[in-house]
Length: 161
Length: 421
Image (cartoon, rainbow over all chains, first blue to last red; front, top):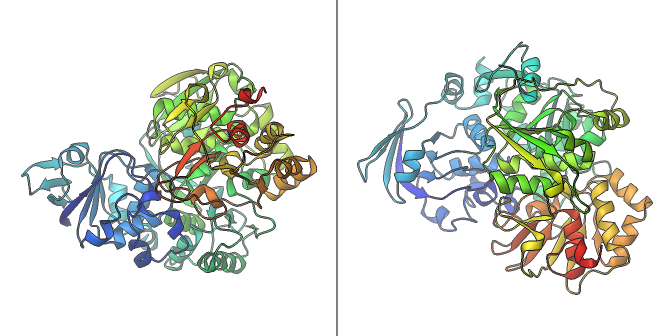
């Protein structure tokens, strides 16, 4: 499995309130949530994001509220992968559980620039910045999590058990 | 190598004699919690499951509290979805408007959380119950759905940071100042993926409400959970509120900690976290005049009876500064009633504050106190992220009830000593 797209780059501690502000949490419809994705940190994100695009951020991405609406909004906006130096733990679980690919890779998070064309190979964990030609090795998932990801989420994984 | 308190609880719930940091386990759950924002997503996920029933109707708690009483039609639809699910599955611990309170104040009060439990909740502040010596942690809606269906959840066993607390907090210093001090020290990702284990003889000088506040904000340091040892005060609280048996765990003497911090509670001063991260802490005595537009006293962090008593002590016989809005939100119906009986509500209203029915409301920018562009709020809540309480160009300063109440009187960020208290 591979993802390729253009990069939207953010800094440290991107919280779930800016990913999807609580004023929109009276809806749980993914398509509606996607129309407000990243609104309080980047009001042009929704206008500019295209299917397959990639979010790259520094440390503690997805901190704060446990709202699963955050990874749901990112996935529904068309984002194919989030790369960060580190993720907040609830966001990390939620992303795996709903089948949004995420990868921790401090080197990639530092080196990749906004607008770069990046390819991620989920099987090998290799992240390639096609714009700069650099490549990085992301942290591979433990086998247990790979099973959840392969089943496209926790619910399918449990159903298949 | 021994186990931490958290590791012992997780091992027992995974049916293992021993676990170590990094190990992936599946643990039995004592309680699965959801609210009006996270439960509808979980209920939708459960619809996709082949298991159609809940694992135990007594071990699920559904607490509509965020946008409740319903703030708009869409919120009403969410609550309707939760209510119908609760009725369909005969969920014992569904709390309708009238009985409901802010979930993390309500569940311990109802005796649903006790020492030794493993609890997950689709709300990040589920870590609150660590104050009672339970392992409790926030998860998302899909984990909640899986938990409701199977009674189990997967965890990566966390490593731990130990906070050795000594001494006695000064007058007007409370659990909020302690946890803000800690977050300021280690940062918003200082405990990422880890347990925050509190120990030391200083804990005896912290009330249960102080401990709830401290454990509640473990997530604001990125922690998986925050946990306190069980002492006489904990036992007394649990016996008063719960009929459930509890199990006391304590860390092994040779448990491994990634870091150990020694904190003398006597040295902590009234502390405030500036926008837009809880780690941006300053002691109130070190800051310049910061004029404010609103004060919020409430939330799962600081809406308990100790918090209201403290705020009332400062507001008694005083008036809210001109042009300032002060919103007081008791966290549960029981606390609300107690505040009425003790005359606290009278004090707040006489001072010029408004007192609301229990709700998370303004804490997450839902309703009941939204900020306009450029406005500033001193709030006893837990997050001061961009746009958290309203406009993206508004500002939240996190503080204790004492600092919030003193600021309500002066109209700028203040501590009680500035009022001669």
